Length: 130
Image (cartoon, rainbow, N blue to C red; front, side):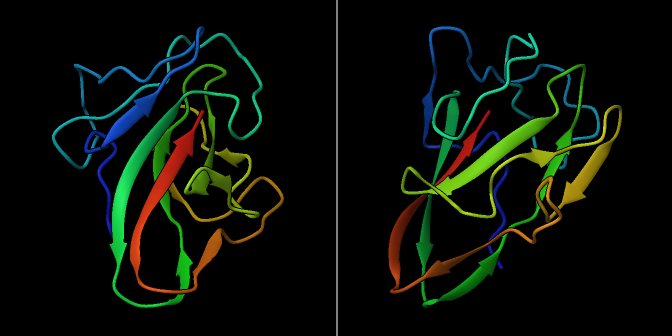
């Protein structure tokens, strides 16, 4: 199992209209903070079009990995997408979070379990896009 805290990214990809500032009130977060995609203007973006958080992960063995994401939906900001090395994970598109509560999810809007395959061990970049 690999566990990542949102605030422990290695790089942030921001767009002209969106960024990922750290939250000062981390009530309910499991680590020492959390990230918020801002501003919450109800924009619907596809994978790669929104701002991104990037995480370095060293996979020690090949295999199929399952993704669970813990999030909190606020206003219209209740969705994210995930990828690997800047490429969309086919089941990692449109991951919804219920509004008003922290929830762990492992499936996308189409109720597909979020998985990806690692063909060989090594360093990869895991991406979370708005």
